[in-house]
Image (cartoon, rainbow, N blue to C red):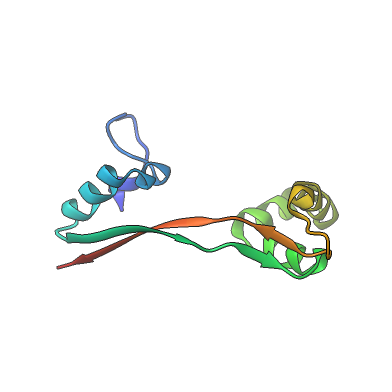
Length: 106
């Protein structure tokens, strides 16, 4: 995993650069794995209502840290504002998400 840590060496990728297929293949090869397939998988986030969305979003480590450094109410307000563009007519929230997957073998 040191390969993923951003250091002084700009040639070293960070975790976001793994969305690049060539970088992901190199990452696998450096771990002595043989890449078989790389594909994108749609996995939208769906919340039936705002309360459920807020509960889900504030369970992340980043949200917990934000709550520790401010208040739960402040984090909820920030999340609610960020969620507004994703509100559906029925009051649910749907956020498009796509994950890049790598299948490899030893």
